[in-house]
Image (cartoon, rainbow, N blue to C red):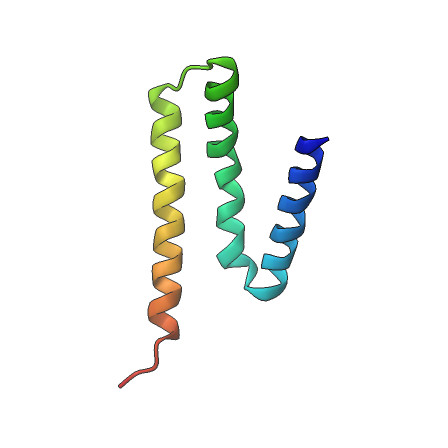
Length: 79
């Protein structure tokens, strides 16, 4: 029951994010579910993380950071 409730809340918040921000800003963060899913697999079932996963996780985080930084810079008014 708890897992279903948390999944529903997560989906509703993601939908709200798509309503309030451009899809290009929100969409990159849907890939973080891979990171969280793998972390939970390690936490509950002892799945091991390999170099490929760590490399991919770093790429996802880096891409999200670059997109957010680019959007912040574009939205700042010119002096």
